[in-house]
Length: 124
Image (cartoon, rainbow, N blue to C red; front, side, top):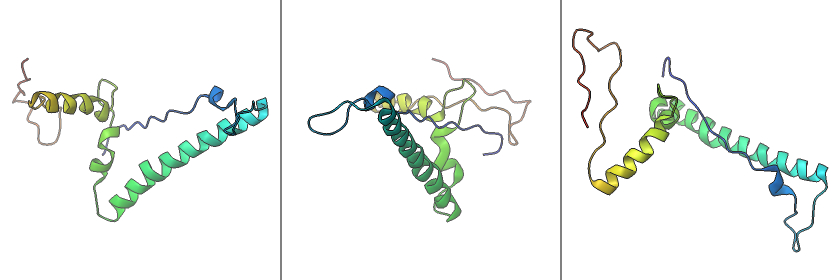
């Protein structure tokens, strides 16, 4: 994973979603109570990201159950600034719909890449 960037996207709840309580019937919260409920929901999202998406995966890697590359593949940032997951999911969907495999990503420079042999790019 050397020289790779990763991105984790965490969508936080809208503060306006906490204007009303969950009681029956719903009651309007004070500004302070609304802010506290929103902050609590945001902290819960951050905890879940840390525990499930980061710590759990690192523990699996540490235990030899998986590899770092396999666990964080979807989060690797590609040269066009999208993540591998954002690129792969539509490709996988299209492959299931059409029964055709998507083209591979072109290889970049690397330890096994010979500069005297250009890589042919897939044609449409």
